[in-house]
Length: 272
Image 1: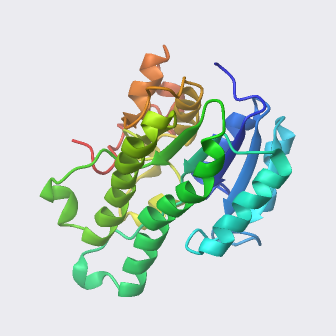
Image 2 (image 1 turned 135 degrees about the vertical axis):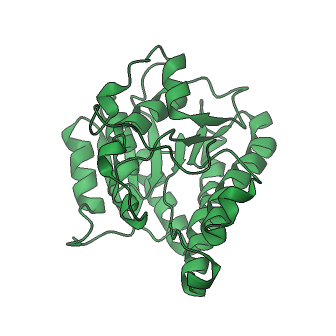
């Protein structure tokens, strides 16, 4: 399979950034894309809403569905999944992209922020999977793809921002568990992570990051497309890196993804 034509994707946090890039890549194949995110009205600090994202999906050949959904709220998630099924007849792919970030030490992490990260990242990924799985299990080539790093217990990733690392590694461990449970049932449950920092609004949370040393979200969109078009059976529990996925697909010149090809690239967190 080389196309996502006719497939239905449920993508969290898809009103902007990486989630939107993945949505548009699938839409160019003619996919149905449910845009599940909180951003229903324009925000001067963060461009993009569920409505502008759905319009962009429609404009490139897909069918977009704007769904206001806070993935911390179980009722909202289940309603969004039901609306997706009512509109498109099922769900073939879940992309757990939504994530909260706070790169501060313990004494500089308010518990409200700590709770937000745990609720959105690991709990939200688990909840969205739980809600989508009854439909994924009926799909011909089902995938769950989560934007999460390879699991690591290296203290260098935990000391500087324990709260965020716990939340992000929580997504990784959810992936590990779901893969063990549902991989044997034919669902491809995998994680994808960038080799370098990606130029999104999230990098504003990282002090001192020069956007010129980043890659664009398109590299993750293309890598996700390569993953989601693979045969699901027997393909589960993998922690994939964007450049390695693209290399396997025969794409080795990645200069076009760089914001500024003349600048050295900044490695992302959680990778040695």
